[in-house]
Amino acid sequence: MTNQAPYRGSCLCGAVTYEVDRLEPHMAQCHCIMCRKFHGAARSTFGEAKLENFRWTSGEGLLESYVATNGTTRRFCRTCGSSMTFAPSSGGEGLVEFSLGTLDTDIAERPDAHVFMDFRANWDDVDDDLPKFTEGRDSNPWE
Ligand SMILES: [Zn+2]
Ligand SMILES: [Zn+2]
Image 1: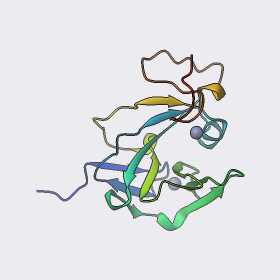
Image 2: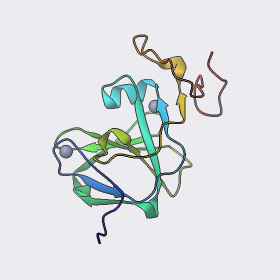
Image 3: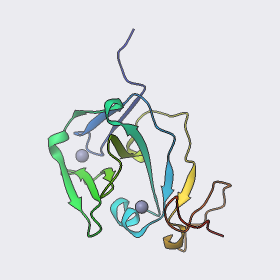
Image 4: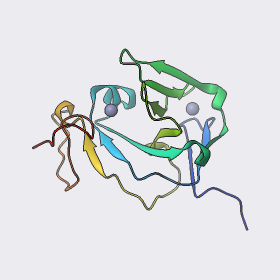
């Protein structure tokens, strides 16, 4: 019998590690410019967990914060630069949004939407059947 959480993740250098007991349903692929820059990739995918279901298991002190001009906060590993978490400027209390790409375990859940489609990289073709929004989830559908 083990006490390991079902989901575990880490940064590239391995110093920062975390565990997640349970994921919340929202899991958007975000195409906004800031996610693209933060990840150095076409899009980000953040998973959400309640604070009580998420814990750093090592290296929390190595996390650096970047607060963007719109007040959002992104944290990354000081040593290897891995993109670890996102926090909105307001709201989102009680939740952690973490980069799904840093998971070391498989998950059963899947992304449920594309957001900020108006900002996507023109080489990033999106051809799945998920709901797509021009900006956030409360914005107009993207056609
Ligand atoms: Zn690291
Ligand atoms: Zn984004």
